[in-house]
Amino acid sequence: MKTVQVNIVTPDGPVYDSEVSMVIAKTTSGEIGVLAGHIPMVAPLAISAVKLKKENGSTDIVAVSGGFIEVRPEKISILAPSAEIAENIDVQRAKEAVKRAEGRLQSKQDDIDFKRADLALKRALNRINVHEGNI
Ligand code: ATP
Image (cartoon, rainbow, N blue to C red; front, side):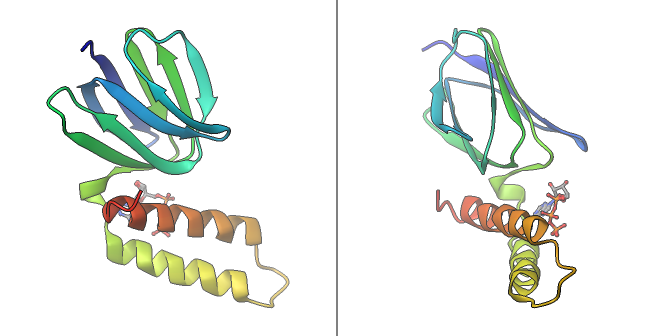
């Protein structure tokens, strides 16, 4: 099977760079599976897991906190505000982020930014799910 180069990049630097046979990603309008040679396309990503199927049959999983996927026939680039390979996720940190975000969402204070807390909660739950292979 043909392979395609995939780069996942954040403002903090590159997170993932590999040749893969298929990328499965969740755009804001649904899941897509992309193979080598795909026509050019750009789509916004949900806070979600990106699955990268390798030629040897293994699959790498990366948590992304949104961003964009840019597909070209010979290269796929994912630009995300933050992204972590499953093995590098600090679950304890994500669990603490869940508690903080849930506390804010349940707060009765007027000055709480609920949208921001909701996004923080989604990022943390996504990291926990990716780390636990629950995707
Ligand atoms: P926190 O409140 O724990 O900082 P956050 O969702 O606000 O979480 P981000 O702003 O998305 O964090 O990311 C900041 C940096 O920290 C990024 O480099 C991101 O990859 C990293 N990061 C955030 N949470 C984790 C985690 N649980 N494990 C590993 N890296 C993380």
